[in-house]
Length: 504
Image (cartoon, rainbow, N blue to C red; front, side):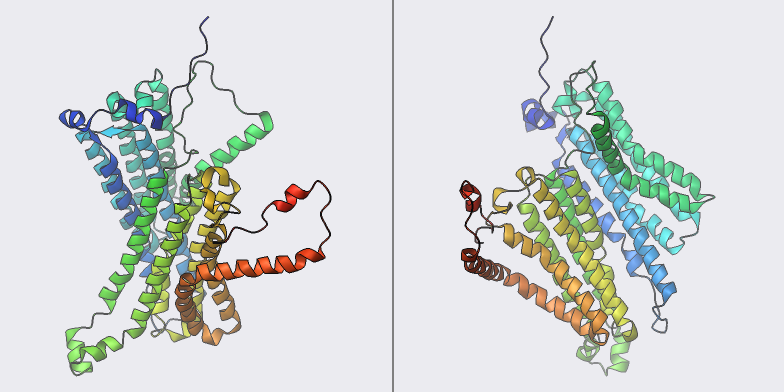
């Protein structure tokens, strides 16, 4: 009777062992996928971000009040934007998982990936139809058909790669159960397109059900994980199948690649910052005829009328840049991104993508002064939600800090208090500005601009402020300490544990 077989090495462990030299791979027409993945991440981040453009271009005439009908229209478009943004990120996550299985590419596989990217680039057009004609089924139908086409191309990539096993990751290439791997991968990939197929059918006669099914594409992986956890708590963990000693590692519940999460996030921030200047170029370059007739040929005077727009642009760009800086600092201290952290990062990016809408609202102060209060509140809400989900990533990482965080960022580490303050700055500032507008509504514009000016200076002085705050807390602790009762014998070890983080 043979002894138990050793488990196969992980995907990463065998990657270097079976990889041929670059010259040998090039001679056989095989390439590494790193550059193609970078291209795909950049394209997907662009597509996810430009979804906000139909929302920002919602036309509200200066004579039209910001009444409930306008609020309902804007809320509906924002909700549809969030749903489609998250669906694109689901496609990006599936692409990431897929190329954890496919280790190398050839010309055919590269062309299939380009076909997948081409289909994805059509999504913003279908989204524009959805938000412009929300009750017409054609936009929903075309969006769902695009998602189905993306799934079909990804399924072709799987079938092609498994037909030529040398393109697969080393673990799967050497496995005796490649058929099981292929079946499992295909099942995960076609899950979302199958729901969109049902949504496309419902769009022809009952479109609200289509939106519900499309939302299921987003939540299904998390519902599946929650159901698995509940089942494990009730009946115990599931035993591995007797016919296989392998553990299948291609799972939507496993952590995403930290590098690809950072690349996708950087792409979203970069595109959002770029979209801001596009509106400046489109709306604030004076017409030559107007300069000659209205301003007697003075270009300086003509540009002076756009001063509030430039102020809104610089404030919005500073907000995007500082949110990126906080995100960069956060992931600098993260060792491993878990699935809940990935979900929170996606939600944060979805609201970061809404920052061009905040810019549109604040730049419209001069055109619609009576709507300043609503515009400021919308902008504060977007900034708060984009930043609070960053803070939620941090708190989630602290729950498993031994696995997810660098030692310096854990509780008691040198950077713990500084990171806490850095990530809490924008949520506190935007929430304070929102609250102040509720009390001092006539000064809403001044309050918002004061927040935009104060936060960058607070970032510059943050480390000094944190050091002063920690020094004050330690001094207070030293004053209160002698008043407290002496610790009981045997509690000396607990008394030595640090109550405050080390100095920054």
